[in-house]
Length: 269
Ligand code: APR
Image (cartoon, rainbow, N blue to C red):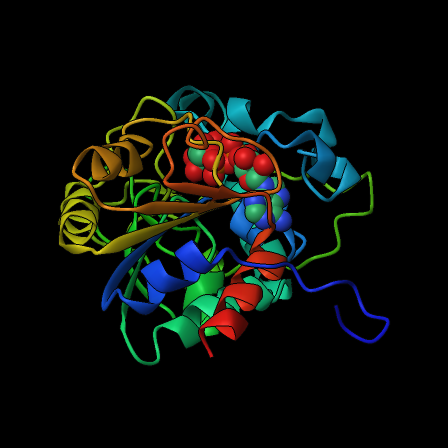
């Protein structure tokens, strides 16, 4: 217990010993990792689950994050992703992101994330795989050429003006003239092969897996920790609520990212 602050969560000795003895660790993170940075998760009712601006509340993220939505209204989809990128730019890595970066100070910690934000990177972690892409990697929807134009910069214009038209026509590729699309993986699309391969190799090479903030229901990503457990690699979950991975995890701690991960770091001292 600390003087008057919120009580510091206890990390079981078995978990501390596992992490202390591991030189190679893979972190597998989901939207809950960024919840305490003010970025809503996809399915977590208590975090509101919807976008942070009234303007976007009439749109369902699952509806916009699809190839069909892009085909139907590319300007709406492009406007939504640029707004999301602008929102991420105003967010800060939380204590959980920083704890993971510190964990990597004297051991190999590879981050495999389902998140499309850049908060792990901004905290200093080595992100080896963005399994579902990134808000900051737009590319041509025709030839795949990465796009670095200024019109792909995050959109930080205020969105509280309800007359504001969210549609922003996507830029065109300088190489082939095709429309530039967000660099994220939409429902029904394949994961980037190189990111999948790096994630697969990291899991197989690890002595322990730390899973943070994922419901564990989206495949094939969710198969990675399940397979690690079957291979005898200990999996430690940090999540304030039970997830689909809680039953298979070696240890499942009802702790949030920003509470549990700093507590783990302190316990390792
Ligand atoms: N710390 C840790 N975990 C948290 C926190 C927190 N502060 N707040 C919420 N969570 C947990 C929730 O309990 C839930 O289990 O984070 C999880 C969020 O689950 P989802 O919203 O389903 O997010 P995620 O698992 O990342 O979704 C996977 O689905 O929508 C697609 O492509 C999208 O990458 C995403 C994928």
